Structures are given as C-alpha cells and as structure tokens.
Length: 190
Image 1 (cartoon, rainbow, N blue to C red):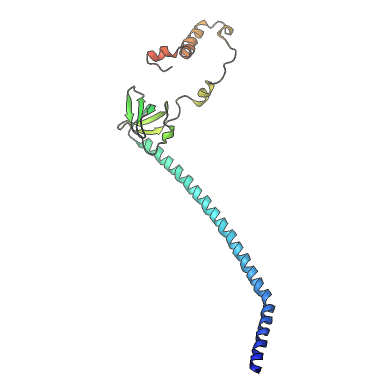
Image 2 (tube, rainbow, N blue to C red):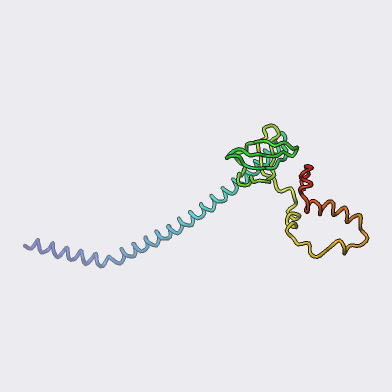
C-alpha cells in the first residue's frame, strides 16, 4: 500500500503546483485575448480602408467611362440635334430632328433613359440616327429660372418716348406669350 499512497500524495502536490501556476496561465490567456482584440480592431480598420478604396475605384471608373463617352462623341463623324417627342417602347423613341422631320430612333446603351422625356434635347448620330447623348437645355438656366419670376408692377405707360421700341417688344415678347397658337400655326416655336 505504500506505493498507492505516494501516488495520491503526488497527485495532490501536482494540483497544488498547478494552482500556484494558474495566475501565469491567466496572464498568458489575457495577453492572448488582448492581442486577439487588437488584431480584430486592425482587421476592421483594414476592411474600412478596403471599402473606401473600392468606393474611390468605382468613382474613378465612372469618371473614366464618362470621359471616354465624351471623347467618343467628339470623335464621331457627325451629329445633329433632336428633341424627344415620346417613348414608344423600351428601346425606341420618336424624335424630331432640328431639320424638321420626325424619326423613330434607337438609343445607345450608355444613355440614361430616365432623362429621355418629352422635350429633352439629344444628339443624334447623323448616319444611324441613334441617340448618342442627352444635351443640356437650350435655354440658359438663368433665363429659364426667370420664367417663374414676377415682373413686378412695371408697365409700358411708365416708359416714355419709346413708342417704336415698345411696339417691337410687344411683337417679339408679349405676343408669343399671350397668343402662342399664332406662332405654332406658322411653324415658329413661341
């Protein structure tokens, strides 16, 4: 039996030694957890950097595509201006060209179809009559915004000695606004 008692006492001694050695194991574990958390923070920061980098690449790609489209448009043989009258289906539009006739035309895939509404100005390829791009409004934006401004209480009676100029102003400005159908009937856009 002596041998058996020695084993038990050895086990008790090992447990005592392990209990004494536990604090360094906990320190080691805590250090590993701190390192792990630090690496996780580093990983999150790197993931944020990658996300930001991807967004920059996408923005740069869009700029590049737009620049390339503009360059192709400048290099094309010739274009004419048209006005979208209406959309027939997903791909076809009725466009009135600047020279007068109306055409059923297609559209380049790169053109934003949401911008192709009634009255939109577009550039048409002169040989295929394909819509190449949407053009800005013909009227200067400042002038366009003035359409909605109130002219105030100014009247022609307040302007003296300019009868001929007043008559010309009425003919050129007031008449198309008051009676646009007169101009439309003779083919002039009021």
